[in-house]
Image 1 (tube, rainbow, N blue to C red):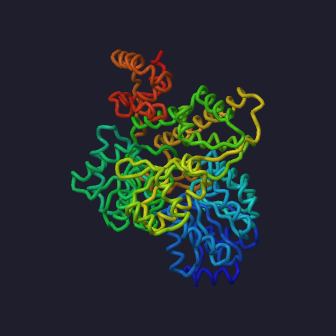
Image 2: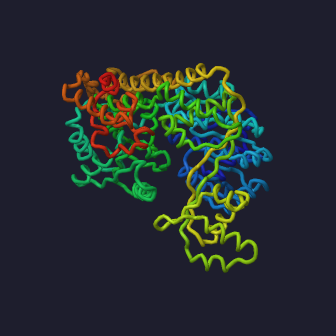
Image 3: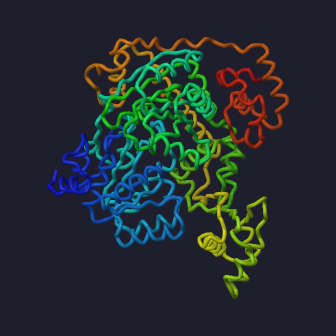
Length: 636
């Protein structure tokens, strides 16, 4: 390692030496080579791009999916005198311009963006004119369909890096099995010799696996919290309603507990997160929506009230404990009943072939240049939006489509003064233009709604002039402004030569994803049933064998897990079969497909169920504890 790098480490980051793995990664980057890094959560991945950024003349572009994490890192860099900024949806037009001015003039060393930012054509064109010394991709396992958290926008990042002539790439993650790491290296064209994996093992984490029944789980969790010294705690659950129920139970027992899940309002989620960061004994009962952006080093306990859906999810979630290197305990309350819900999520998410067929027909019947709402595509085909985005990405990568910049079809605004007061601040043609523009809006309770495309046609004005005017009024605080109705631009590059072959190909990719997800769940079952060192098993899974027993897991501590109890076969009772028959007759117009009805009865949301407004129906989720396949088989 060069003396300059050591000096940067001391002067800007206050460390005398590098952590395990950091030196190898940074040496590769400083030598002009692309690199990959697989470090455990809290293992110091961010330093691997922050330090080299100071040594490079150009810009370090950091791709991260988490706005909260971007903010935390930028604040920390600013405190060290390092120029860094972010581009995200929370920035005003003026803030965006200031950041891009700093990029163009070279004042910034690091720029953080979300992967979705690359869908913006203007941003892509601007980046092509910037010298990008380092293209750093955080959560890089998301590019791999072998991984546990595949995100379609990640698939296109390697092509963008090449378009921008990025001088080197750094792919980072905390969770990558050997096949996923190989996929990362292949996609980003990284030599395998430049991939550094420090392994899963952390000596300060005690990993416990305890077999429980559904009926005793709450009692067991409360007992654990009472018998162990108080400390910051995360309890992970699968469902939002479970988060609320468990948090209420803990509060009734006197614990300082709050629920956190994606269904809460953003300000509520933010207040829970802020509360937890400041707390010395707080308990957050959360879905996996919690933790990714939480920089709290003294979390003492992580409990899995429900089974994790994969070993990768499990390792990521327990990785949030004990980041201060002090002892921490992570315990799974393993309950066989959880498997049905987790399997149902997987099986209920796979689109039917008929749905894929409708999707392809819809898409390729459009004009060569078109814009579309993913929401509308989902409703018309009954395919969930994440799957729609994945299918669109496949079609881009296979050369059928080319994506453009998304735009908003509608605006909502709440005037902060009367129309007369707004208009008196302007004169001439622009005042008349604003008067006619505001007249195109429709009032709905306290907010006004404006269809920008329709208004542009009626006023015979360019769409971008209307958008610029609304943005300007919002910036001057004359209007409280919100955008609605995202539409995505595409150009069709070619028609499929064989419609049925393309449908079969896309449908098969969905089936393969389903099989991979079920295998990941089976890996969790095998871990719980294991009678040998569980930590050694996990280390082997992540490609870094420990070579010995750890001494601090359930097996090594002779704490028998009991394994997962066999799930009792639960044939559908005659009254349940009759319930299914009645539901099929009564809902045949809203849910004509067997799969749609099975999803409804098992409590699995879908665009068709939302369209029919059936979530409030008392039968929705009435069979959520029954296997999806058993319910489907019972529908004639």
